[in-house]
Every structure is written in C-alpha cells, then in structure tokens.
Amino acid sequence: MRTSISRTVASGARGLPLSAVATASSSPRALLVARRAASAASRHPPPQATRLASSSSSSSAPKSETAESGSKAQPAAEADADAAEQDDAPLRPHSFNLDTTAAPLLRLGAGKGKHGKPGAEGADRANGGEDGAPKRPTAEQTGRGVLKFVWPALVGLAGYGAYQFGLPLDDEEAIRHKDNPLADSWLGRIRLRTFSIQSELSSPVSDMLLPPQDPRIQRPYTLVVELDDLLVHSDWDRQRGWRIAKRPGLDYFLGYLSTFFEIIVFTSSPQFGSEPIVQKLDQDGRYIFQRLYKEHCRFVEGELVKDLSYLNRDLSKTIILDTDKSRFRFQPENGFVVKPWNGDPADRELFRWIQLLESVFIWNFPDVRQFVKTYDGVEDVPAAHKAQLQAHRQSELGQLEAAAKQRRRFGLGGASITGQGPRAREPKTYYDAQSELFHKMYIEDEAHWQQNKDGWRKQNEELDAKRWEKFVAENGQPTMIE
Image 1: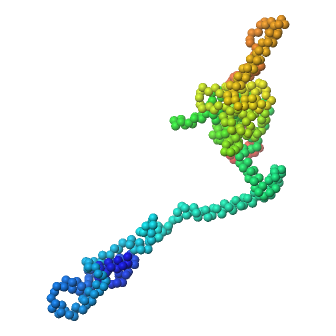
Image 2 (image 1 turned 60 degrees about the vertical axis):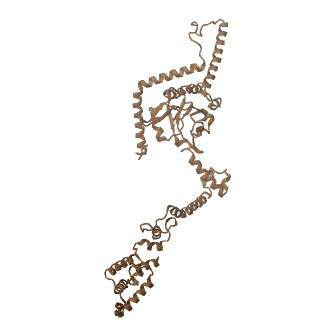
C-alpha cells in the first residue's frame, strides 16, 4: 500500500519534495497538508517541472536549437533521468491525484472486522466501538464476572449454614428431640434441623386452629365444609365481571344443620378473597361458627391439605365435606366427597346431603368414622343412604304392624292407646318422627327470627361496642385495625 501511494505521488506531482510524500503516507492530517501542497505546486510549477514540459513539447525541434542552449541541456537531461528512475508509467496531468480518505490508512492497522473480514469495522472494534467510545462488555462477559463473586458467596453461605445447623442442640431442642438418634451426630443434627424447618413451613399457622367450644352454644357434632364449588360458585364474563352465586338450598342447608352441628367453613382459598363471601352468606353469624382459609392448610407434596387434627375438636364427632378427597387425605375416614356445583340452578345436591347428615344426630352415632366407613367405595353416598333408610323404614313399619296385630288379638282392636277409637293416622318410624320434630323447630325458629331480627341486630351492635370499649380500656387503642 505504501508503494502504491508513493507511485501515485511521484506520477501525479513530480517535483514535490519527498518529505511531503512520506508524510502523506503516514497520517490523514499529513494527507491534507500534501494535498494543499500539490494544489500550490500546480499553480506555481517548479523550474525542473517546467523544463521537463518544455523538453517534451520541443522534442521535434532542430538540433541546432538544442546545441545553442548547450548550457541548459545538462539540467534537462538530469531531470529526465530522475523521472525515469521514479516511475516507468506515462506522464499524467499536472495534478495531485491522491486518495485522501481515511479508510485505506485505517485498514492498514485495523486487522479484521465482523465475521473475520478486514475493513473499517475491524478498525472500529480496535478503537473500542463504532463511534470511538470504549467497548462495552457483552451480557455473557457480565454474567461470567458476576458468577466469579456469586459462587464463592454461595459456597461460603452453605458452609456457614452447615456449621450452624450442626452445632449441639439447645435446651428446648434437646427436650423436643431427646429420643431421636439423629441428635447424637453432626450430620444428624443438620438433617434434624432441616426437617424441622421444612415441617414448620408446610404446617398451619398454629397447632390449635380453633378455640374450645363455648358451652352455651356447644353442638354435639362438628361439620367442616368447603366454600368454593360446594356452597357457592364463582363465574366471570367480560360484560359483568365476577359473579358469585349461592348453591340451591344453601340457606336451608346451613340453617337446619346448624341445629346439630358446629358448622366450620374451611376453604383452600386465601382469606382476603373468601372472607367477604363468607360474611355475606351469614351476616348475623347465626349458622357459621368458625372460618378457616388457605393459611390454615398444610402444604404437602405441592398440594393444600386440611389436617383435621389441628382443629382442636374431637375427630370422632367431626365430619368434613369437600369436592376433592385429597384435601383431607390425612383423615379419609372422616369425610365425604360432594359433587361440585357448576352453577346449574336445578341442582339438588345439598338437599340430598341434609337427610344423611341429620341421621347422624338422630341415631346419635358415638363415632362418626364408623358411619362414614359404611359408605367406603360408594360413588353416590346420598342415594345409598336413602336406600338404606327406606329399607329400615319398611322393616320398622313391619314391626309396628305386627305389634298392632298382636294388640288386636288380645281384644284391643283398632282402638288407640287413649281409648278414643281407631287411630287417625299412620304409624311413623322413629327417624321420621324425629325429623318432623326438628323441622318444625327450625321453621318456628326462623319465623321468630324474622319477627325480631331488627331488635336483636341492634342489641348485638351495642354488645360489640361495649366489648370494644372494654378492650381499648384494657389494652389501649391499637395502631392497626384488621
């Protein structure tokens, strides 16, 4: 490249000093200086160049004229010899035809550009960036630089954690794990403490989710029910957004069964979304005694599980209804699976379960788990119970009819026990009589509530205000009211 530039300079600007040519081939600034010098040379040619031009144009003149200027022939001959030595190419016009762009010079020291190709891109990379700015590290280089510090930090934290977990047990831990052989070794204590943390993270917020029952309103049995798709169904559309519907028969289900059961709504949904729904279902707190949410579940193998052992209730008197059997996997002998509701207004599922659940109280089962076990593997439990109840009714009615025949044999005829003539109604089984009595009590209680609900609500508000004043007087005004 340097040779080409030198030849161009020599052929286009004969008579230009060699120092200008050398400087022009070294830097872009020198090129500009050389170009200006060439322009000046073309306007004011040096004597040597003039003599070269004269000798070229008068080559056909007579020899006599050449001899007369013998004193000037010697410099012209020397100029021709110098021109022949510098370049063998034919003479060009008297101009400085030199490429003054920076790209050829940059290519000399730029190396290769993108994809291994030489060019200005390689020069940009060599200088740091396309605009000459310092080159920025790539994402891969940044990630590698971060990992140089992250990995040692993680290893150090892991080592420190292993050291802390392997320390001897304190007094409380020693009492809790006194019979555990893992407490005798360093690795054993690491495993023991790791399992303890995992157990705490997967356990409910408290070992006792419910307080003891109030003796004034205590019920003989406890009924735990799911909220979503068992009592209510949530639906969403673009026109109206979220809508929540009550399952047909819900009010009757809660009102009637609250006579026999302490009803606890235990849902696997978060409290912030379920609490307003439960509050709306029972605004006066007459039916739903307790409420539990997702925060009270156990997290086992990626699933939420309702562990009834945390309820602080007698499991022999506790029944759970849910739409998914895996949610009460720890106490399957205490629960039934209810068909989920998808919003069908003709659904009658809750009415069918009322008959089964009221029989638990009427027959006064000492252990409901034995009652639940009789329907193990049955797909439609309410239908199976209804068939059993009908068979029992027929058997009991047959016994009543046989007793009536026995009385007639001894001369009592069709008279009633009071002696007031034939019986005016058909005999009833024990179950039917008790069910009729409890339904009558429920209807009377609901009528009484409707007549006096305004006064009772006002009374409850006054009692709540007094309790709150007493709480503030004893504990002070809380900073946050939940």
